[in-house]
Length: 213
Image 1 (cartoon, rainbow, N blue to C red):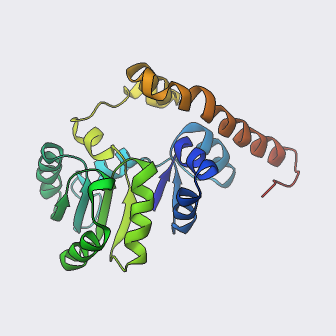
Image 2 (image 1 turned 180 degrees about the vertical axis):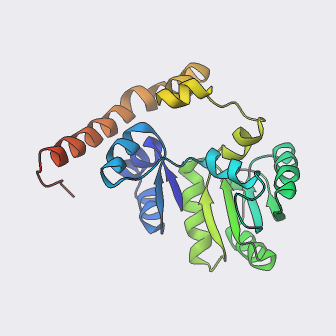
């Protein structure tokens, strides 16, 4: 399962490996207003990685389950583990580091031994989603969900946009202001093309015209 934002669509358009991993997912949920704009045509609601992680910390929100964490950092996982334990969930496996440092065969084996119901892939989309696809192809059990920085944002160890900014749908501006050097090209050059494509889809649907595939 993938919580899809503009980065996913941009990577799918520019990377064959990512596109293959993206299309191999069983479910997608929209994360970000351009995707939500298109999804609303079918009554779909926005679901973010942060939302999913917060849900695991609320007693009674989700039936007790065994989960694993792939990525993030030790401090964040400890805080998240404590909060999810109060909600009746058990963290049965945790592996830190980035996607490049993880041996897929070993991780798949360890997750198989852990018998997790849910695997939270807390890595950047560019490497995390292809890694998750590789694990699934090796028979990794449970539901794998790419949550990016959702775990850290859900427990406050990673910065997240203020609620007003989230409601306005401009989290991208918050992130751009925090990391302009790393994100300016992605947000100001690559993503506008994806937004334009989303607007075209909405307009064509509104006019009753077929949507290009």
